[in-house]
Length: 165
Length: 290
Image 1 (spheres, rainbow over the protein chains, first blue to last red):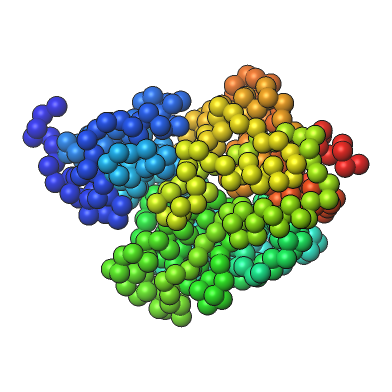
Image 2 (cartoon, each protein chain N blue to C red; image 1 turned 90 degrees about the horizontal axis):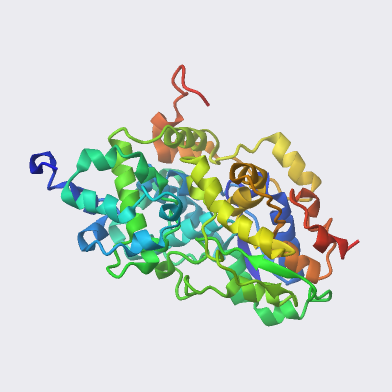
């Protein structure tokens, strides 16, 4: 590892994100890794290692890593951390930075588009409400205008040509 | 008692047996669940990509709830966790609150701090109470053993749950099962995450996460696993066949909702409780209700 390849400001960049502050308190004890149900089955996913790389300033390596998207957000790590790092929240901060740098998997945009169009991850139309009515359940509605106002016109734009559903 | 039902995205489309049984049981316990048809997504799905947007979506729901003055009762653990965290965040971070209010303004909404969020299981335990539930049990389930599945977001992060439970030693679901006279199994993978959170990113990994518990409970031969979250249900019931194939193992674990178990013990029929929609049938259990 060459120091010139490291970005000493990366940890502060993470700390400025909501939930990212904890990274500054991590002393790499690996309680998070020991408790992580993802790491138990996939040892290459090691939250302590990801946080360590981030502290060292390996910005591109961390943001481009497909491993950061494997946090199942169970928050077990936050419960066992002696430093109150809230590792799961720090990883959310890192994922948000990665998304802004263009590294997010396409599912993120797809979900934002679905929410902007329907306000729900699963579309509720006449069919769904009829089925609900048959069981005596009250109707639910879609309020796309609210979600478009929050998520912006960009999210509501139609899917670019050639991109799958 | 009145409370505000929060259905979220998945339950009102995919888990109608959960919703049906939750409404029946709540009504029988004297809880009036009020509906707001326009409550949509809690924001959880966007958190990994844009948590500021996710927080506004949560705040929208909390602001709508605030108008009713009622406690918000989600059936989904992800919704409950997300709304609990959002309320806690907004109640303790004036800068975040101010930003969110700006975003809510065009919607004609304002978030007023202090909205209470209680997952249905927690609401039944703390606000209805075991004594009141016990008073409604007419068909004790003493011959059955169930495996509680807590999942993650009923308990975590404990710092926003106002002392609800020790997430490393949970007892709430076991107590809600035992009030019916049934036994609640304590087992190795009791606290295991279902893997639902990574299903989109790595299906193989998600399946193997669900598999640890399914293998253990196949051996244990319980009447059913008891869940309280639609995502956990996707992993354990919806994906059960795929997981068995992946692991090359025999897996057979009926999956039921807490409210279906409570309903049976309260004298309701399997049909009323939506058991027709359960895909891995709890045969041993249902045979007792023919």
